[in-house]
Amino acid sequence: MFGRRRLPGRTDEQLLLMREAGLLVARTLDLLSTEIRPGVTTLDLDRVAEDFIRSHGGIPNFQLVPGYAHTLCTSVNEEVVHGIPGGRVLRDGDLLSIDCGAEVRGWNGDAAFSVVVGGPDVARPEDRDLIAATEASLWAGMAAMRVGGRLYAVGDAVEASISAAAARDGREYGIVEDYVGHGIGPKMHLDPQIPNYAVRDAGPKLVDGFTGAIEPMITLGSTETRVLDDDWTVVTSDGSRACHFEHTVAVRASGLWVLTALDGGEALLEAAGAAYAPIAA
Ligand code: MG
Ligand code: MG
Image (cartoon, rainbow, N blue to C red; front, side, top):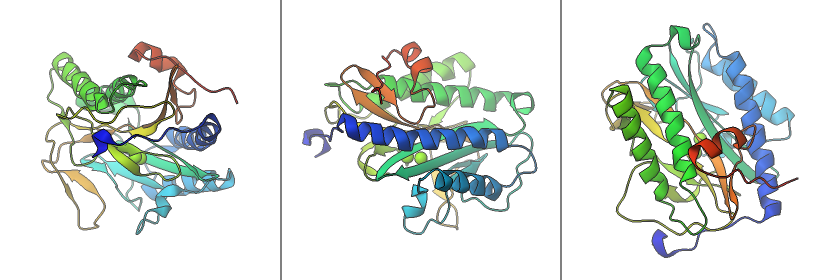
């Protein structure tokens, strides 16, 4: 049972290696954010990401997932996650989610963000609200992690954050339950799973050096999803738009270190209620 099994804790040396992988993912996503514009295809973005990761000594770790040949997942509008880069031309107002991972010297990072193509000015108001609510729920979920606390506090915090945003925005948001966060380290996907919603169990106890990928997927409607005939692309069952944010985070006795954030989480952790706790290289 997950609840009884002790989670792994990474050493400082291992966390520094994971920071290298995380920073490469962060820089890749930062670069992509400048490349997203109307007229660009999702495959164009994938090539930019692969070139950047490989030229900086990393391996696109999504390509290590059996059956998957790309560096990114690019999910547009009603696509939630696992969209395959291809010839789709992005248009003003599309809600694009980009998920990216890299392995560096045997350690992994995994992160995602969502944005409206063409910028906030061309975004539907509900998409702007959805993006803000989803990103805030990611930081709330991470901020619920502390050594000696319980892992599934993450889901409680994501759900509470989404409920508060729904009340504030006057909208109904759906938390996708079919896909969840996960442990990460020497491989991108490790046990345990980390739900984005409240569950009965408290989950395993968090230990110093635990590393997880927290990744809320929120919709403007249904919590239900289905997989398209390409066997990868996950879409909302009601066609409502979806949003996805993810970070790889390390839990330390003194606080958190967001390994896939450019600044390690320095700017946003404290506002979310957690201390910023990097390791000096
Ligand atoms: Mg991911
Ligand atoms: Mg992930």
